Amino acid sequence: MRPQGYIRTENIHFQVDEILGFEPSGEGEHLYLQIRKNGQNTIWVKEQIARQLGVKPLDIGHSGLKDRHAVTTQWLSIYSPSRQPDLDSIDIEGVDVLQSCWHAHKLRPGMHQANRFRILVTKVSEPQGLDKLLEQMRDHGFPNYFGEQRFGHDGNNLDHGWALLQKRKLRHHKKKAIYLSALRSFLFNQVLSARIAIDQEQASSLDSTGPLWGRGRLGVSEAQDEFERKTLEPWQSLCEALEFSGLNQERRQLFQSAQNLVWSWPKKDQLLLDFSLSPGSFATAFLYELMNCTETDARG
Image 1 (spheres, rainbow, N blue to C red):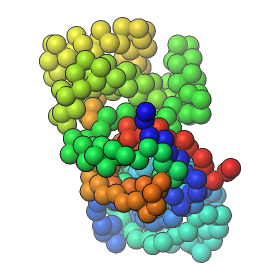
Image 2: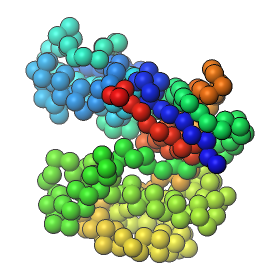
Image 3: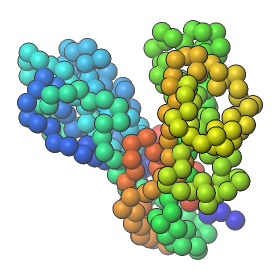
Image 4: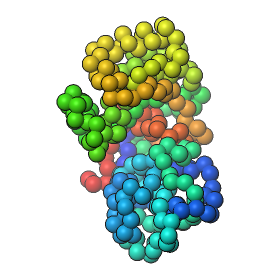
């Protein structure tokens, strides 16, 4: 029987710190802000900052989207070539500005080096064997699935994106990037599951990749190309639609490493995890490989 556990019983039990990986230069037209947010959505916070500072929402950049039901730190950039924004005017519940510095370039998605997670899992049942499993995951990685948050509430990003793509109405949609990303992520997860089903040892190689679907094959072997196409035959119309949309295929690691993974047991039924992941990898994928997790966020 798989262990069970609860996450997000309180926001503070799910902490994420964005590791930028470089120091802002101190010069340029983009003001970098490091913020801490508690219980707020990154996109909503950006909209509030834009309104309060009187700048265009598109002039505020971010590198990563951080969990809402968590306590997180991350960086934003504000394009402001002619004036110093009045940071004292930022008044958003659950948001604090920690520091600021000028830099030459706008923050773009995926520019940060990593995300560090500190997660407390509570009410852990059947904890026997978890230490050994964590050692295995530390040494060999874990399946790099896209988490459920990529697909939206009840999978709405998939449903809406596919409907718009079929009607060729996605091209100028404001959520085009989100919907296309969800559809490609869905296909990737199918390939990853199929690879694990036939040969987990081969799939778990950190050099093994799967497709973010689009045109081209990026030098994959004939056998790998054939396997991926056969796996995705049930979704052939989706694959063709993604190619028609103009996307070029990209590759993503099938397995991911949890960097600097350490853990402890504050209580016999509480597991405290500390690890870092590369941008685009999901802590929930790590957790669900470890045990069945029930998310009980701070909304009650």
